[in-house]
Length: 373
Picture 1: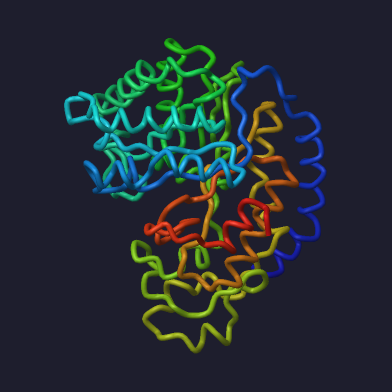
Picture 2: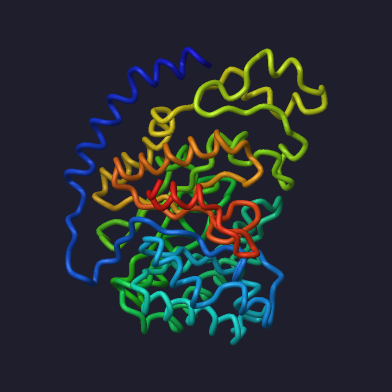
């Protein structure tokens, strides 16, 4: 494994930098204001998605002052995850309060000069970590998914194309890539019938992974598409001791850059955790290897002449601090060097946040992500 990685560093990195030169030099030039373009953003998680907050607690969690703060930090957009169960009842009727908050957010962003990606994050028929996902087998659930987008279009088509973009679905996880490609095409067409020029954000199957980007079928002859990948590698660092993962019992060593976990460190671990981390022993990560892992989405974007975007990346807050900051610095530098737009995961959280739920700032992390450090 280590020999293979070293080979990629020495041989693959140079090829990828050459590819990037071509990609950046041939990327579509900025056009009129109607074009939706994003460079540096943050996710507004745990508000209209993945949250039990309702009523005043939900209203107070994210407000106009947060949007003003985000703009003041130098971000140019937010990615706004929304969940079906928060936005609609089981019969597809809107929850008026949630729709109002979504539209408030867009209006605040417009006032502060921020763009918005509205991301349909979790469906009742599809959760990216669920074992059973009826969306892939039930035609009625698929039609319901299209109807949700038709309804979102009715609510949001009033907004200019350069202000709001639509992300079809967060982290599709289908058993086979073609299932996602077919669903994507049908949802894409449903929106295009209503809004021919709205920017639509699409990613690859299986958690928007870079590894599966070559299997993504992108609708043809449409320039209003933003290709999106997510990036949480190395997972042993980004999800260190994360309670919802197989690493929930792991509190041992992890390093970045360099060898993530050495053989001697592994041998000293409790036997119970060894099976979950053995694959990381002797594996090396550094800035060049991070870039190498982006090669498939970069190639796809170059081939199609479309912009590329990383809609999620981050490290859980309880990971080793020095390694965390070194990883973030490399990531931000790579985004700047490649011209790939990004939104960190996320703005406000006790797990991945730039600020915690009590509004305490992670100043060092903020400085890195906003490139002020």
